[in-house]
Image (cartoon, rainbow, N blue to C red):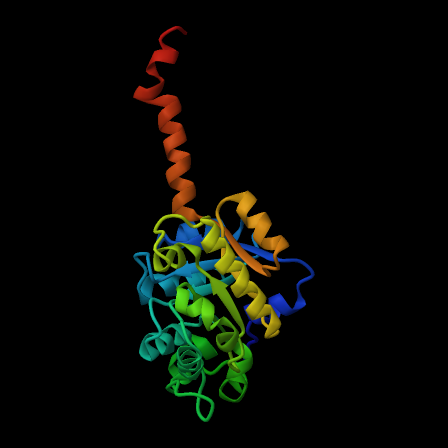
Length: 266
């Protein structure tokens, strides 16, 4: 029975009449991923770079969120073509590749994500979830339509090369990472340092001038709103583990030792 795949994140951005808001899914738990998928956000970033996610847990999370309208994007741990191939074969239709700082690096990412003659992706669709085990008609012929490729600019060198990176054919969008960018600029931990904000905005301008959508990570609502006004087409505004950490801390402060003094007078 022929099956149809869902629209890519590239397609969703192209069709959107407003910026798309999403959140990090970093716990490694399919259950948590499913909870997040049903929250009403536009997209989810399943992270393999700074989270305990391997191939098996990423697959389980892709399966868990498949029934929901939020579009999953997988951030692979690096630009390694073998990893990219395996994540695509899991059925990830959208990938984000970190630490891309030149057009040459961006081109290598695009090649890793596409079959020959455009790229170097190995052919294993008959064995893989990507083509639903050959249940998607003409998957090999149409594979480029089923995959979107986003790269992450998060170094000072990447900011200077942002226009060339965005101009690479096959790069569907650029995501700016202020945390690593701040570290690269010598102000570790200061994502809202004026120089960092200026670099983010310059990257926005360069990417948008190349005709590509640009996104950014911004957990502070005021910062996120500023970046949206500056032209961000997609944003990440929270993370599953951060929400759990802050929420559980609030419970602890209210109901455990920290609140004993207040409750003593009840």
